Length: 249
Image 1 (cartoon, helix red, strand yellow):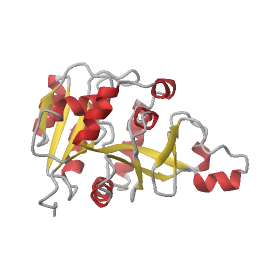
Image 2: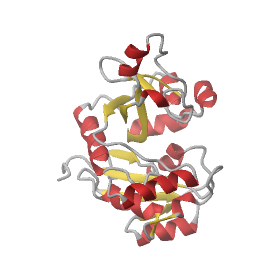
Image 3: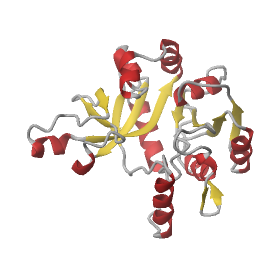
């Protein structure tokens, strides 16, 4: 049951435009649009009070409402976090917002709950995210984002490169962590983040979380209990379909 003193909203930023896969959040999976699966899984998280979909497209808004979410129309936004901020910063009655990616139809409710529980247990941190052990074979894939963290669990850096560098492969393999694209924000930190605007490191790696680190903002990186399966291409969509057919989720 959700702690009555902590009001948590899941916001799913979902835009129509996508360089590699336009309209992907409406792609059909098991007879439903992708966004419906995301909405349902987010709503199954015990720590979530409400689910919103922030979008720039009426087609997505209609699908979100059909799935039981509140749709919020937003304008042109530089990033998913900027879209979340546009939807939430003028609203009252919430303490933590969870940015759930609209292209993760298999998002595990347990991951959302782990993120929120971690933030509740670490009130001095305003941003949190998740990671998983990384298959060493994926370490050099630039589409796989890696994270390294300090002894307190705070992020040191995120990169598309293999970090730490595998000078001794056996040692590095045990330290490689895959970053999962889910974030929790407290109101003040979300407002501060979007006011900063894109940073040089963020532009260099095309990773918006580097904006926080470059400006001295701590990010708590928690271990996720379950894996994640994002959809960037039609081939990814086929993989998700296969996972569902095999009953993996």
